[in-house]
Length: 78
Image 1 (cartoon, rainbow, N blue to C red):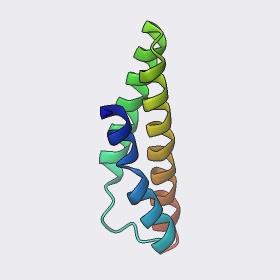
Image 2: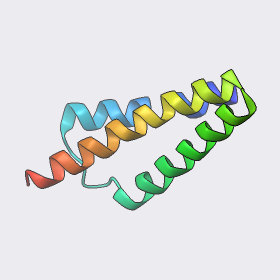
Image 3: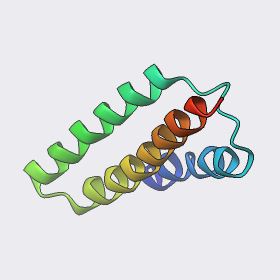
């Protein structure tokens, strides 16, 4: 349940950024640090062969990566 909630927590932010293209309040540093942390958790899940850790952190990494791409893409256009 914790993995589902923490992963799903990124969906509204990614959707809002995608829809509005407003990245003014998005911290690039925070998302980069978070992305690295999620990747490390993913590697740990791979190491211990834990499907739940792999899935939760894999999906979260994708959502955070999309948010980072949107942040960089929409910031450059301004």
